[in-house]
Image 1 (cartoon, one colour):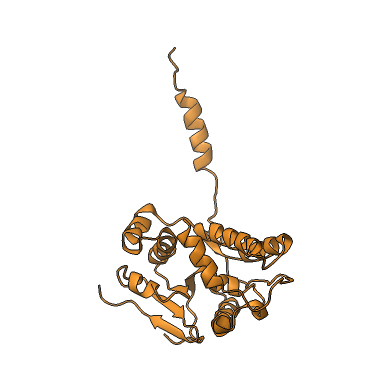
Image 2 (image 1 turned 180 degrees about the horizontal axis):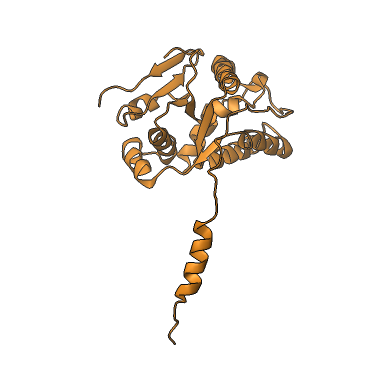
Length: 59
Length: 164
């Protein structure tokens, strides 16, 4: 079976895409991290560096 | 670099980012100064309207970090989810670093995570803020990326680009 590519259909759609006035998104300015309300089950034990190290070494 | 000076753009390591969301009282005493310094940096960046950039691998790292906190019994699952959402839903600029840049960095760092952050900093030409002084060694091979690391005492060690 031979499938013919419909040039007119392709061009019609490509032209409609090209003619769209697409604005580039504005860069996001950092507004800070909102700390969540957390209830720790342990206190004074957490070292994030160690956890990220474990994550990286496990990959 | 003057620590008071704020650039317009930075790439931020995940450990610097989580210090902005974790309560200081649960951190080990030896890193509390570092956490405080990172928090102060994030506040200054927000105040000055800086743009903070992340590679997509940041998403995985923060998610895995939250999972580990739950697995290791630091928080219940809802709190771990809240932590991940809080860090991930903030106003980062997300990027896919180019494969070429990642591979260039990977050959030097031997670590895909470091490579993504350094490749992005290289691509954007902006400083990489992290807490891992080992990056100094790796970074020195990947000029002209500039990087700064917070020491455990909370001071900022700056390593501006040098002639390659």
